[in-house]
Length: 124
Image 1 (cartoon, helix red, strand yellow):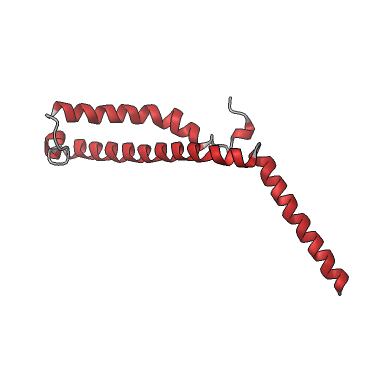
Image 2 (tube, rainbow, N blue to C red; image 1 turned 90 degrees about the vertical axis):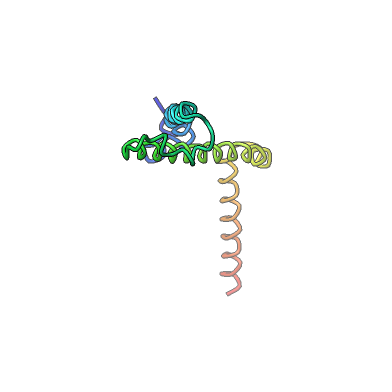
Protein backbone atom coordinates (compact mmCIF):
# COMPACT_ATOMS: atom_id res chain seq x y z
CA UNK A 1 0.00 0.00 0.00
CA UNK A 2 1.32 3.44 -0.92
CA UNK A 3 1.77 5.82 2.03
CA UNK A 4 -0.46 8.87 2.03
CA UNK A 5 2.60 11.16 1.87
CA UNK A 6 3.46 9.72 -1.58
CA UNK A 7 0.02 10.52 -2.97
CA UNK A 8 -0.85 13.81 -4.57
CA UNK A 9 -4.59 14.10 -5.13
CA UNK A 10 -4.99 10.35 -4.75
CA UNK A 11 -2.60 9.48 -7.59
CA UNK A 12 0.82 7.82 -7.24
CA UNK A 13 3.89 9.91 -8.15
CA UNK A 14 4.74 10.25 -11.82
CA UNK A 15 7.95 8.17 -11.65
CA UNK A 16 6.07 5.19 -10.24
CA UNK A 17 3.50 5.42 -13.03
CA UNK A 18 6.21 5.61 -15.69
CA UNK A 19 8.27 2.72 -14.36
CA UNK A 20 5.64 0.34 -13.00
CA UNK A 21 2.57 0.93 -15.16
CA UNK A 22 3.73 2.26 -18.51
CA UNK A 23 7.12 0.56 -18.68
CA UNK A 24 6.06 -3.08 -19.13
CA UNK A 25 3.23 -2.19 -21.51
CA UNK A 26 5.44 -0.01 -23.70
CA UNK A 27 8.17 -2.68 -23.74
CA UNK A 28 5.59 -5.11 -25.15
CA UNK A 29 4.52 -2.48 -27.71
CA UNK A 30 8.15 -1.87 -28.66
CA UNK A 31 8.83 -5.59 -29.05
CA UNK A 32 5.69 -5.97 -31.19
CA UNK A 33 6.80 -3.11 -33.44
CA UNK A 34 10.27 -4.65 -33.67
CA UNK A 35 8.78 -8.03 -34.64
CA UNK A 36 6.75 -6.31 -37.40
CA UNK A 37 9.94 -4.67 -38.62
CA UNK A 38 11.92 -7.95 -38.60
CA UNK A 39 9.10 -10.00 -40.16
CA UNK A 40 8.81 -7.57 -43.07
CA UNK A 41 12.44 -7.58 -44.09
CA UNK A 42 14.02 -4.76 -42.05
CA UNK A 43 14.93 -1.56 -43.85
CA UNK A 44 13.31 1.83 -43.63
CA UNK A 45 10.05 1.29 -41.71
CA UNK A 46 8.41 4.41 -43.16
CA UNK A 47 8.84 3.21 -46.75
CA UNK A 48 7.31 -0.19 -46.03
CA UNK A 49 4.32 1.00 -44.02
CA UNK A 50 1.82 -0.60 -46.41
CA UNK A 51 3.59 -3.94 -45.95
CA UNK A 52 3.17 -3.74 -42.19
CA UNK A 53 -0.53 -2.98 -42.28
CA UNK A 54 -1.37 -5.41 -45.11
CA UNK A 55 -3.86 -2.85 -46.43
CA UNK A 56 -6.02 -3.04 -43.28
CA UNK A 57 -7.02 0.28 -41.74
CA UNK A 58 -7.46 -1.32 -38.32
CA UNK A 59 -3.91 -2.71 -38.34
CA UNK A 60 -2.58 0.59 -39.62
CA UNK A 61 -4.39 2.45 -36.84
CA UNK A 62 -3.02 0.08 -34.22
CA UNK A 63 0.51 0.49 -35.55
CA UNK A 64 0.23 4.28 -35.54
CA UNK A 65 -1.09 4.38 -31.98
CA UNK A 66 1.58 1.92 -30.82
CA UNK A 67 4.32 4.03 -32.39
CA UNK A 68 2.86 7.17 -30.82
CA UNK A 69 2.60 5.70 -27.32
CA UNK A 70 6.12 4.22 -27.49
CA UNK A 71 7.53 7.61 -28.54
CA UNK A 72 5.66 9.37 -25.71
CA UNK A 73 6.99 6.78 -23.23
CA UNK A 74 10.56 7.25 -24.48
CA UNK A 75 10.18 11.01 -24.01
CA UNK A 76 8.79 10.56 -20.48
CA UNK A 77 11.55 8.12 -19.55
CA UNK A 78 14.21 10.55 -20.84
CA UNK A 79 12.68 13.38 -18.80
CA UNK A 80 12.69 11.13 -15.73
CA UNK A 81 16.37 10.27 -16.22
CA UNK A 82 17.29 13.94 -16.77
CA UNK A 83 15.35 14.94 -13.64
CA UNK A 84 17.19 12.28 -11.64
CA UNK A 85 20.56 13.49 -12.91
CA UNK A 86 19.75 17.15 -12.22
CA UNK A 87 18.45 16.32 -8.73
CA UNK A 88 21.91 15.20 -7.56
CA UNK A 89 23.53 18.70 -7.76
CA UNK A 90 20.43 20.20 -6.17
CA UNK A 91 20.67 17.71 -3.33
CA UNK A 92 24.33 18.62 -2.82
CA UNK A 93 23.47 22.33 -2.81
CA UNK A 94 20.63 22.16 -0.29
CA UNK A 95 22.44 19.55 1.86
CA UNK A 96 19.45 17.71 3.14
CA UNK A 97 15.73 17.58 2.76
CA UNK A 98 14.01 19.67 0.08
CA UNK A 99 11.05 20.33 2.38
CA UNK A 100 13.33 21.72 5.12
CA UNK A 101 15.16 23.88 2.58
CA UNK A 102 11.92 25.38 1.25
CA UNK A 103 10.60 25.99 4.78
CA UNK A 104 13.87 27.71 5.71
CA UNK A 105 13.70 29.97 2.64
CA UNK A 106 10.04 30.86 3.27
CA UNK A 107 10.72 31.59 6.95
CA UNK A 108 13.66 33.79 5.99
CA UNK A 109 11.66 35.81 3.46
CA UNK A 110 8.66 36.15 5.76
CA UNK A 111 10.94 37.29 8.58
CA UNK A 112 12.50 39.94 6.34
CA UNK A 113 9.04 41.08 5.26
CA UNK A 114 7.87 41.43 8.86
CA UNK A 115 10.99 43.36 9.84
CA UNK A 116 10.63 45.75 6.89
CA UNK A 117 6.93 46.30 7.69
CA UNK A 118 7.78 47.05 11.32
CA UNK A 119 10.37 49.58 10.22
CA UNK A 120 7.88 51.23 7.89
CA UNK A 121 5.23 51.51 10.61
CA UNK A 122 7.74 52.94 13.12
CA UNK A 123 8.83 55.52 10.57
CA UNK A 124 5.29 56.86 10.16
